[in-house]
Image 1 (cartoon, rainbow, N blue to C red):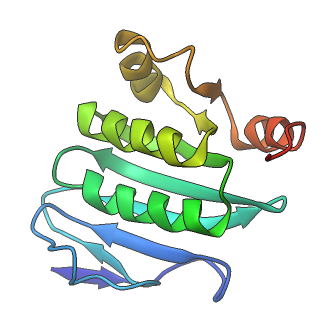
Image 2: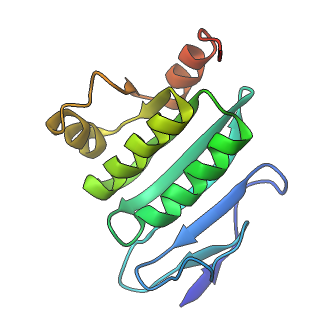
Image 3: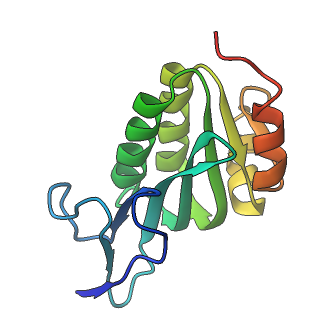
Length: 151
């Protein structure tokens, strides 16, 4: 296992990183963990334009989805009613990731997803493209979030 330094400013986010052999208790906030031979995934809880955003990168599968879920749960607690999930840097996304988004929708009420092609394809195949607000970039998602009140 190799560790890398977090590149986000201190105090701006809580970061969760994981690989296929990471157990839920072994990685703390602000600590990124990488594994040789597997791209793993990172999920950062950040603030953008006054909104809480979960920004994920890498591969979201059955091994990594629990950590994405942990970041989503933290974000929903910080700002209930609406959640932005930025998956623009996600290279692989399967049904495990969709389960995280569906759970987030139940808890947050509204989920805005920045969805690159691999993510968008899974959302469309599952028939949930009408349930989630899908965006091509984070700026568009943040602008749309600002037009809706949480109530």
